[in-house]
Image (tube, rainbow, N blue to C red; front, side, top):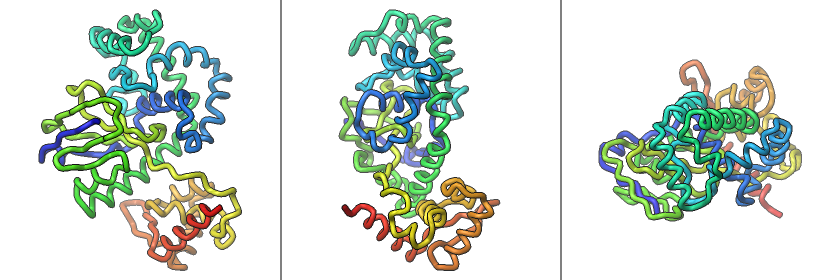
Length: 329
C-alpha cells in the first residue's frame, strides 16, 4: 500500500498538472507493450505503434534500451521521470542529462537488485551513454507519443474539469476523494491499496502534484525516493469502446457531428475543442452548439476569450440513456 500523509499545508498545496507529462507517458506507454491488460483502451494507439517503431528503425533500441529500464514492475529509476518534464519533453530530457552520476548509479543498482541490467545500460552514469538514451527517448516520443498528443491533452483537460467540480463541491478533500476506485482518502492520508510495495510518503508541507496519465492503466504510480518532489500519476478515466459509428440512436437523431459535439460537452468543452472532437471547423461547431443550446441540451458561458459549453439536465439525461443503450447486447 502507498500512503501520502497530509498536513493542512499539504491540502492547500495540492494541485493538478495542466498537461500530460511526456516522460511519465513514455514510461507508461512502454508498460502497455509488456501486458495485454487494458489493451482495449489503447487499441487505436497499439495498432499503429509497433508499425511506426518498425518504420522508424526503433524496434531494436526499444527492446535493448527502453524496455529493460522501464520494467512493468515495482521499481524503475526515478531519474527517468524528473519533475521538470511537466514543462515539456526537452526540459525533462535536459534534467535527465543533468542528473548527478552518483544518483544514476545508485538507482541503476536498485533496479539491478530486482532484474538483470544489460551491460551497456550500466554505463548510464557516463555522459555519452546518457546522451544516447536521451536521443532514443526523443525519437520514441516523436514516433509513438506525438501522434496521439491531441487525445492526451483532451483527456487531461477533461479530467481537470471533472476534478474542478469535485473541488467546488467538496474542497480539496472532495478532489482527493474523486481520483478513482483505487485511490481512497482517509483524512489525513491518501491511500492506494493496490500498490505493490509498502510505502509511506510524508509530504511535510510540500503538497502533492497529481498527474493524470493517458497511458497509465489502473494502478497509480509515484516516485520511489520520498525526498523527491511528491507526485502521483494515475489513470485517466477511459470509457469502454462504443458501438460502431452510426448505430446508436443518438447519431440517428442528431447526426454524427452534432452527437459528437454533445458528448464533448459532458465534461465541459470550448467551441474549438468540440470542433476538434467532431472533425469540423469552429464555424460549423458553433452552428451545432447553437442548435443544441436552442434544443435545451447544452448551456454556454463565456470564460475569458472562450465559450464553455456544458450539458443541461435534459442533455445529460439524453446522453446517459444513449450510453446505456450502447452497452446493451
